[in-house]
Length: 326
Image (tube, helix red, strand yellow):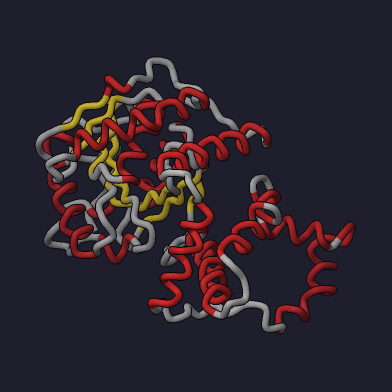
């Protein structure tokens, strides 16, 4: 591997971010970076991408105003370019959010590596692929060491978490730089020590999701029961305390040690089924119908607004409604 090219500026000095891919995740990143006071250039190959992107940003802006905009934050600081090369020409950081197709990711990252100024870190929003799998072949990317994963949660303009990890050919300095940049940009950062398919949070929520599918498939619980079991139960604790510390408190003054000694044998009980069930037509219909029943007369826009307000309220109630950390 060739020697890493020094980053052209410090994370604190970044002023222009390029977002490649302007769908739900990419558009959410655009809204977040604009709210944090950055100039943003965006590119997406879809012919109607700009209209959709500006609508997404406009819809997100009221929530972002509630959270507190950075000095100079404005939707007018968004430029949508005609080509990928134009989008990254002056970028000081690049966030790629293309669809989850491995070959597409590889070819796009190679194209970004060729077009982006030397030393500028390129981060992928992939929700599951390790960067080692996405890094283009040696003959397709001159500087794969600047490619990292910056995995957000939807919507990126509201959910603070971003998981950062490099691949086998990623330079440690690029991972460190990226983690610091996301922190400066107002995100809550987990810098992973090693690659893990699905990363951390997705693997945890996937386990819960698979068990939910099993219960619906077996007629053991309804969609409404499953959702209520979280929103009215452990979800209220998880908003401010993770499952490990929550379980530690279950051990009383003895903490996690007592909890494990007391409840450890229950791990052998048949409480969960971690293999995914067959997603057949019946299970699919049950999930779709259950969610439609739960939504009632609320439209998609109504549900998005309700979700956004709920996240804001939880963040405010738990003292985590962060302002600009730059």
